[in-house]
Image (cartoon, rainbow, N blue to C red; front, side):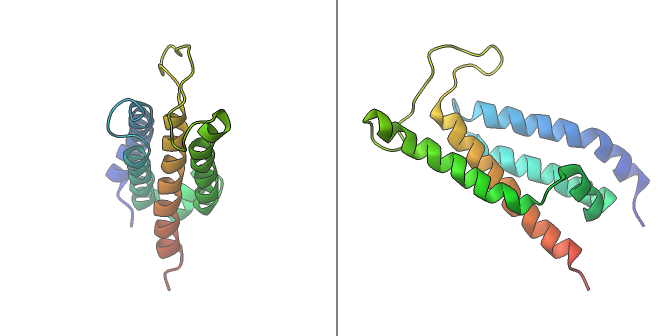
Length: 137
């Protein structure tokens, strides 16, 4: 039996935690934090939703298997690592666009690397969670 209090709280906490994870992702290319911590917070949000409503309901929110996020994230991170070599720079050199975006600030290759890490972390944690919870005998 599921707790109505946890279900109600999760209805409000899920968007707040996802917004906070996005904040951590954006903050990470200037300060500590970023993709890994943001991905963990997003994963915790979905784990909390899964505890309250069941894994099937959480899978419906995601609309695709979390396993598909892993290669997408790895690809984005790999491109951000290799991209500076096309400009004659060493791999993993930060490339920054000149103009600031109002809410985000300066955009650079570090943000894309963090985005890839974010997707990999969310994909791995949720794949493990759903594999365990959906394959119970």
